[in-house]
Amino acid sequence: MIKVAVNGYGTIGKRVADAVAAQPDMEIIGVSKTKPGAEAFVAKQRGYPLYIADITKKENFEKAGIQVAGSVADMIQKADIIVDATPGGVGEGNRVLYEKYGKKAIWQGGEDHEVAGFSFNSSCNYTEAIGKQFARVVSCNTTGLCRIINLIDSAFGVKKVRATMVRRGGDPGDVKRGPIDAIVLNPVTIPSHHGPDVQSVLPNINIVTSAMIVPTTLMHMHFLNMELKNPATKEQVIELIKAHSRLGLIEKSTGITSTAELKEYACDLLRPRGDLWENGIFKESISVLEGTDLYLFQAIHQEADVVVETVDCIRAMAGRCQTASESIAITNKAVGLTAIR
Ligand SMILES: NC(=O)C1=CN([C@@H]2O[C@H](COP(=O)(O)OP(=O)(O)OC[C@H]3O[C@@H](n4cnc5c(N)ncnc54)[C@H](O)[C@@H]3O)[C@@H](O)[C@H]2O)C=CC1
Ligand SMILES: O=C(OP(=O)(O)O)[C@H](O)COP(=O)(O)O
Image (tube, rainbow, N blue to C red; front, top):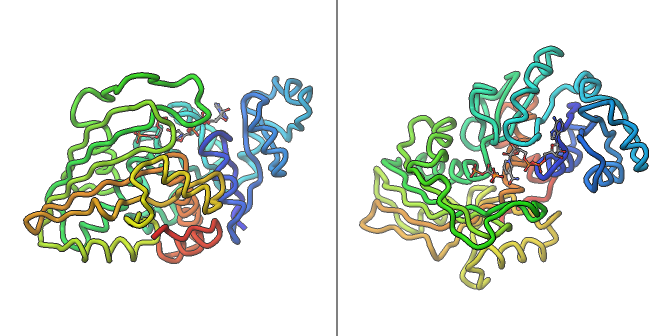
């Protein structure tokens, strides 16, 4: 069993912990928090040993009835690999600890590519991660972009991508975030950071992105245009999407034309936490104009899509599966991911 620690048991960390615990070849040896709170109680209920960043705060946890297994340094020493899901910018400072104990570590998309020197997406560069000490799973938006762009590029060649991201303001539990009543250009400059981030995984893709933030918490929405090198038909694109286990297709007959209805659908399908690990591509939006001009809308569940990628990244770095398809199949089966059709 691969011994996995999750440093930072928040929105992403708690999902990664459950996904790892569900795998046949991995186990959670500990998760970490800074303060006692609802997520610490969830960790206790799940039976994950809880470690804390600042051991002098141990009493605060114990007073709240939460047992502390030790410090983050203790946790790291017990693990084969650490998933760092601390808030963006915090994880970079943890690298010295992972180096000190000679451990493998995976960061999330809030950190810069340079923190690991390697950015990961299961469908695009799984084999490059095999045996690596450090990797970064790209952000939720970049993950959603990489999946579809790489698929289309492999089949028809992509000359140029233009994409606009309508980003959720914060996660459902992020009560202090906004905006409450605005569409914020974020960033106001073009290109946004998403294009270069896609290129950290797919260096040969010519891409320009722009982004804004809106007052919603459920999902992001992407508008994508890909100029193709070779002609394609709408039907061919749909067949390719259907064959990809992490690209979901939203049929007209569902009546779903929004993130809210899509999230409700995922909840009604009894996905854990209503998580949509796959891209939600609106079938009706797929259009190929003049043979080489592909357009589509896709919804991305920011809290979920990177979770399954992180599990594959663990398996690749541990050297357990030599191909992406093998690892993706194990991960999907263990969490119960069958892409929506
Ligand atoms: N929330 C999202 O939609 C997505 C987040 N990401 C990335 O995932 C990473 C984590 O983000 P979230 O889960 O949203 O953050 P979060 O704020 O929900 O969770 C972070 C957790 O880390 C803990 N923490 C803070 N400092 C710590 C420290 N020094 N040591 C140990 N634990 C510490 C906090 O108590 C909290 O439980 C970031 O890099 C973010 O950019 C990536 C994709 C989507
Ligand atoms: O990494 C993300 O988005 P991004 O790809 O737009 O940077 C996640 O949705 C987290 O974004 P946040 O930094 O707004 O919490």
